[in-house]
Amino acid sequence: MKKTKDEINKETRVKIRDWYSKGNKSCSVVLDMGSGKSKIGLDVAMKDLNADKVLTVSPRTNLTGFLKNDKNSWEKELDKWYPNEKHRFTMSTIQDAYKWKDREYDLLIMDECHTVLTEKYSDLLRNNKFKYILGLTGTPGVEIEGKYDLYKQFAPIIYEYLDSAEDGLINKSRILVFERELNNKFKMQSGSKKKPFMQGEFARYAYLNKEFEKNKIALINIQQQAEQNGIINSGINLWVFAREWGYANKAPNSKERAIAMKFLNAIQYRKKMLHNLPSGVFYANAVKEAILNKNKDNKVLIFTEEVAQADKISEHVYHSKMSAEAKKLNNLERFDSGEIRELGSSKGLTLGLNINGATHGILESYIGSTVESAQKKGRGHRLNIDDVFTLVLFKVKNTQQEKWFNKVISTLNTNDITYYDDVKELIKNL
Image (cartoon, rainbow, N blue to C red; front, side, top):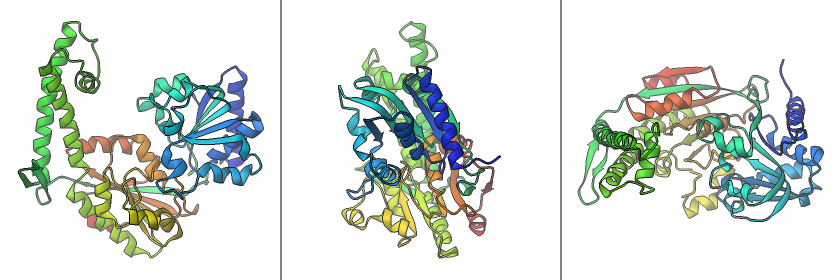
């Protein structure tokens, strides 16, 4: 039986009240887009707790955006639901609030808590007093991305609702996967700054991957020796070991630290290469133009990992390194209003911003973060209920990016997935 927003609100708040009534002071809830997450947080504060002093913390982009005149999402919600109670609320970014000490509040609401709750930012909870704590997120997978202990300690998840599309609260979506292999047709810069040269994508990746594997084997040997000598515990993740031996400089000598740093650098070089593929720009532009030309009402969001890559794919961007001219134009508002029909970004469009009317999305490059990918897909759930959002996801076979893809695709909440190895066939089915 389908649930309404009111039913989800009541059900979630009952869970929260019951949890608090048992002497627990903190919890988190995972609420799908369209379920009224912010309204639930405000109702808990005003109706259930009658809190006089409420602190809401959000990621900087969610609360303030990149532009000085970006709208405050929590202020808008207060204006809508509790316009006469704004004096009870203090709104801050987690980037500012985590530095605070010796402050007291009746309730702390952690908006987008999958981003807010980190080891660094949890200083806010350690150094200040809160009668109650409530974490809100619309993104599943938070416990499997290295934060289980933090959630268990500060805000255990007590309720999840992830059926907005099935219940008709948001529009449905489909995923078109374009899978390709690297070749040497597309060239990219290689070598050093003093002696640069152009190299094919396939050849470049083969070299970087070979360097990664070589340094990986060398580091594994060091780790095994350290275990045998009783210097470290067995079973430590190689990435964690490399960071401790390299970045934290805990290696017993400079030679072993150098090997750890070579391994860490090899990871970064390979990742950066995969996030700056010329072929990615070429195919993303082809798909983007096809989307815009197919229907004058189509609007597309383009997501990349690197800001420079977004700039190459779209002339209209929204990210932290926007030009002064782009900031003046306010491309986010122009996209919402329909003045522009394409918008490129790296991470700027993932953090809880409300973006209206996007009919298509392109994930040109990404890492294996289920949280970020779910957020990017979520930008397409602002259509009419009967509309379908189309997400085009790029997959580069036989590379590390394929492993990232496998992790991401396993968590995106849709059964409508089609694979193409010919971009022309994909374009026909946009």
